[in-house]
Length: 288
Image 1 (tube, rainbow, N blue to C red):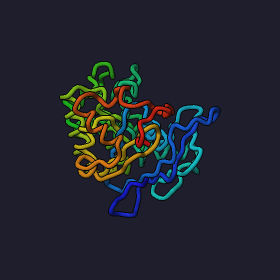
Image 2 (spheres, rainbow, N blue to C red):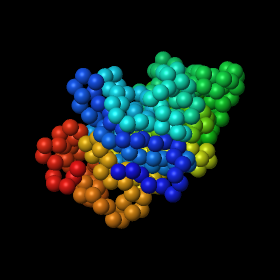
Image 3 (tube, rainbow, N blue to C red):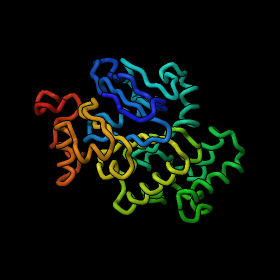
């Protein structure tokens, strides 16, 4: 099932992509087809174990050891990512593609200050001097409305809340001026107040920069607030794709309808909805 957009010019295109474990040949993603145009926001939703994070890792060239793209192709601006050398891919990740992780504290070295993280990234990927990188670090924190950025760059990750760290990551990503932001569960670890703040920053940043966003979450409220188009994943496959409003108003697939119903009673990361990836022997009829 392919995502439909008004424009045929895709920034990111996944063409029948399958990701398998090299030894067991177990497929964690199967026949994934989706496209994301420049400036668009594509939401990917599904319960825990549906393959959302593996999809992010495949796009960013960060698959875990032992996994590979066994079929299909991922293209960025028409270029096949699988043909890039590791060095070329690292350069692309730093300049044109940025990722916001679901667990911000795990993305920072606890022994280094926030400023050190930011300046090193900017020096490496933007080719600026250390002074220019420091100025850019302060500006990037100001951009996401973090208080006292001159003091903040001297602090360590453990001194900041999860919401503040997530905003640091957003600020860092935006300073790189990427064409694509991959946001993997950006609000999962946050309380309601921080969740709203981070969403506001991400929405504002997307409007200001025009970056396309691949937004991955199990939270349908986040999808409703951010996405233009939604892909629903189940057991490593895409089961439904639709414009956001239509998906919420008239979902077609039984699994999507159950997700929307579950939204009112319990979180989508509950294991009671259906079996997870690879456990399809007892799937309710019509869910795949």
